[in-house]
Length: 393
Ligand SMILES: NC(=O)c1ccc[n+]([C@@H]2O[C@H](COP(=O)([O-])OP(=O)(O)OC[C@H]3O[C@@H](n4cnc5c(N)ncnc54)[C@H](OP(=O)(O)O)[C@@H]3O)[C@@H](O)[C@H]2O)c1
Image (cartoon, rainbow, N blue to C red; front, top):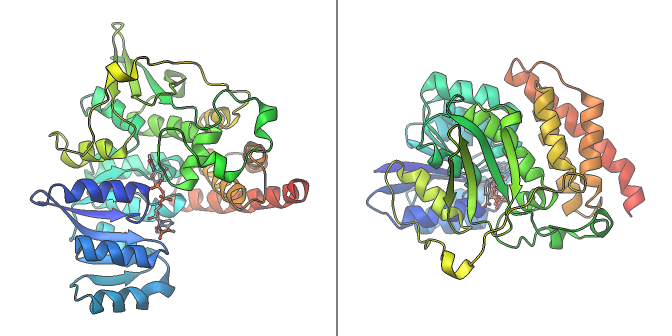
């Protein structure tokens, strides 16, 4: 029986993970559930899944959580605070950790799982962008097996049969991108788009932050950096191709002219089932794509001039050091400000570019250096947002 910590249990990935886990009661058990502030949702999940531990990151909800679990007659122990999240990820009551917290907030618990050699199902791409080198080194040193829970990287992982990319064998990784809700729009057409429109993804149902990232193509940019660290592939051999149907989740080109692709419906339960059962296969609740009915699969290059975030991510990867942390922090600030209606859609790349220019890149020799770069970038990006807020209002 795999005992699984689902961190980010109340989110979109958390829901998909718990759906797959519940399909296999003899095989998987959610032993730890974690969330940030949606304590009522967390309590509801505890009633269904009966974990050993439930943890809410925001301390002020601790008493509500503890009392509700007791009233429901559950044996689930209540915990609160980010330290408790990391301690449970590292602790003896789980062997598998689904890292599905959104943003850099997931860094500490992801690293804690890596440092204790857990089986790490990694959805929290921001921690890879922030500290990919450090995180992958911790996984290697402590024997933590990482299975990517991003449909693209999971597709590549499957095409490589779960092995590391061998640079002599693999010519190129091709990440597919749906293009998001604003595919084929011009820059002028993007100036007035709203948060609701940006979150209305044509194929995927996801949390709001990643939905905006998908609309700006920053999601693909973060994934290029993620692919670099996960598979040890230089940026020059990672390409992006827009594929609006979201059926081919990514591809690997080999030196002999073969290209392998993984296909599936746009439903993260397939990815999670793969990660949970690997190298076996279990039911995910998702049917295979009906290619006869879909009819045609199309591909086109991304519009890098209009969706400038993609190249900002390639630039940050080329700069190296703390630039990934700066890019990620600036993007988190810019996206939150866009979702709050304080800046426009086109301000997002401008805030990130301004922050990257202001912060530059230093060698990333420790987690402290990276966290300091993250904090500095958040300050700069907040300043950039404040200067733009007047213009947007
Ligand atoms: N959704 C997808 O299809 C998809 C695909 C690939 C990768 N990912 C990645 O997976 C991660 C989660 O995405 P999502 O779409 O599931 O996001 P989401 O729906 O917004 O859920 C985010 C989860 O993280 C929790 N959380 C937020 N801040 C936290 C904090 N400071 N401490 C502890 N928990 C915190 C939230 O708790 P509350 O509910 O209490 O706020 C929620 O459970 C992201 O890194 C995303 O890039 C998502």
